Length: 372
Image 1 (cartoon, rainbow, N blue to C red):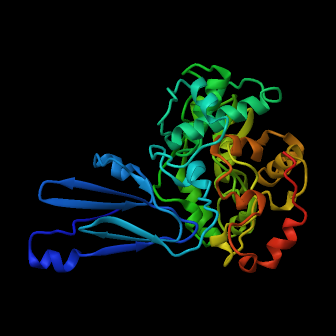
Image 2 (image 1 turned 60 degrees about the vertical axis):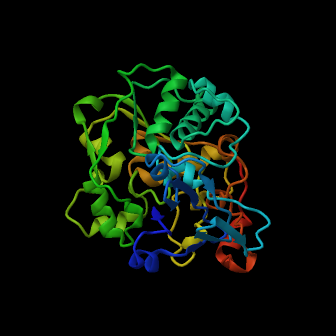
Image 3 (image 1 turned 90 degrees about the vertical axis):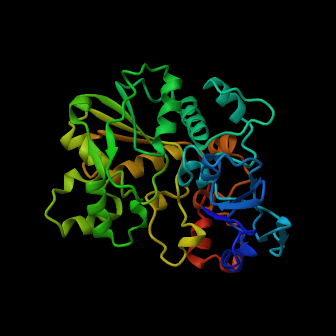
């Protein structure tokens, strides 16, 4: 978050602080606000609402993509130079990136109000949902879709932090008591391991990142709720098998699944994923094009994609089948989050000119069907 006070009191402050501006691209949508007090005014710009909420700032607005925003004694002024006809903020803000307490300023999907009311939220005109409530609704939508296939578990546990809302929604669907909803996987590190580019370093960080409370989970059938599976790095083996071979750690202990299966001695693991399978790279990752866990299953029915990803995450899947994976279908995600969002990682439809989309993405997109 950046905050500015243009009409500062000393000449030095005035020279340093006036006027300020910001430019947004067509895919990022920061929030802006102004706080007027006697004798001074403070401007705020942030990636999401919660820092502004903490300062008690009201009238928080979302900037448009392509805006040039100017903060001055005239207030907040903006002019759009992007010629953007279709604004599509990243859907992953609600799924994973955004803090659970941050408010959603865009319109949500048609089924969101009904699902939120089932969770006890007082949805009425002017209601602004938190990301936590959106994630809980995605968990409840997951329950509605898969309840005939997934019996009530002994335990439900989130993969922290963004899995907490998902787990809460699933638990509400099963009407599970507090004794069965327990956070058994704890996180040590504050930063996000998907940002570590070296596979071996990322694998080691994941091993240090997760801590399991073993005496709670032993012998239990569990639902592990998470926001998404991207490369499979936190969940299981996936793309890091070669990196693991170059370490002294046992291969079977890798990731959340390895810890639950080997250290925790869990009977069965159902991974409940609030987002749809991710077959494509984000626009911002076109430079690296790292593989996706579901990429090899593009074009298959959803249940086959689920089983394929389980096999990639669990090396002994064919022998024991301890692990099952169940994604939300993309339609469920749209029904909760709304269609006015970029979900290119799941459907290959990028809100940019086609000339910026690599040929490998275009070829993969030809095989894509949203079979969920």
